[in-house]
Image (cartoon, rainbow, N blue to C red; front, side, top):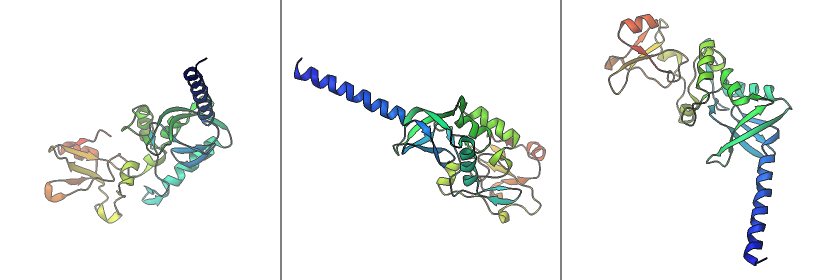
Length: 223
């Protein structure tokens, strides 16, 4: 056997061992870092296709703020417990985390977090969990029970508007005019509700009901 062939055989065997090591690191008892990040055998794993509130993020429910990032992490930790989970790798992100769909038995944990309202579909990377998000929004589950800033926007520095930024009579539907001149209204809990600012000098306004907004010529936001 030539030296070149020996080297090739050695590299192939090494690659096989490395692959087996990586694969085994994706199965085990997980530590929950936050609502969309786990750690198994020291390897960080980012849940594919979903985005949960950050650890320090607060949301609002019943006019009261609560730590929704913490609640999301606790929900995931309680669901997993000490059970062994299996994570199917989809990618590696820029932080060298494995991006994966993780399962508890046959249950897709990514989908479960979205359906429970503790994460949203991360449309920038996948549309796999949009249906689950729509169901959670309709049921007003988790963060959908009140107001929140989309996690990606929160990471950019956007925060919930304070109470004094809403109208005194609690008409909280935001009638926004976008850059194309289209009149779109956002209801509390909608994805873009938090970041949207109303400038009445530009013809934007607050509405007390969706019916009022529709009659005024506004249409509901897509999300």
